[in-house]
Image (tube, rainbow, N blue to C red; front, side, top):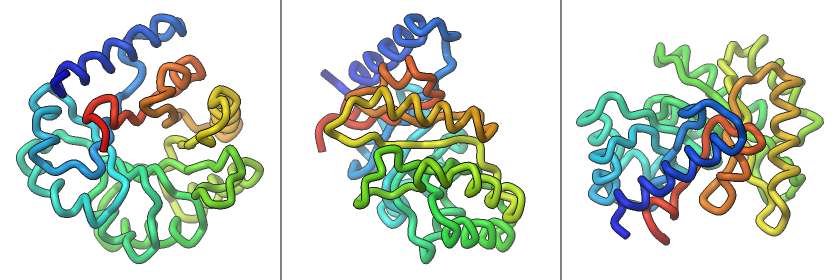
Length: 219
C-alpha cells in the first residue's frame, strides 16, 4: 500500500472505533508519528491533508520540521519522546505540544523557556501506568500533586495526560487508569494508543492516538 492508502485506512479505522464507542465523529485526533523518517517521506502525508505530527527527538526534529512548518504554517507538532532539561529551549521553540512532562526539573525549565521566548506551549503529563523502572513518566499516585504544581506554581497549561502501556500487557487497564486520573485531575485530553492498540484506546476515551508504522511503514 502507498502511504496515502495506509493513512486513509487508519482514518477509517479511527472513524469506525468512534462509532463503535458511541463517540462523535472527529472526536479523536490522529497524531502521525514521523520519527526516523526524512522530510521527503513526510510530505506525502502532508499532501494527503495530515496536519498533526509527532516526533521523539528534539535534535532529529530540528533537521526537518522548521522547513516543513514554514511551508505549511497550520501544522501542529507534538513532542512524544523523553525530554532532557538541556533541550527545553529548543523544544519550546519548535513544538506546539509537549506530551512528556514528567518531573519537576523539566517542568520548571519549560516554564522558564516559555517566559524567555514569549511563547505559549501546551503540555501533557506522561504517566508511567505500568510502574516500569526503565520508562519515563510520573507514577499514577503522584500525578494529581504534580499537575497542581505545574498549573498553580509554574503556570503551565496542562491539557492532557499521556501513557505508553507495557508492551507485554493488555493495554485496556492502563487506558482505563489514565482516563480515571484525567477525570480526577480535571484534565480534558488523553493521548493514548499506538499502531497496535489505538482502536482499544478510543474505546477507553482517547482524544488523540499516536500512529506511526501503520502510516509510514516499518522503520
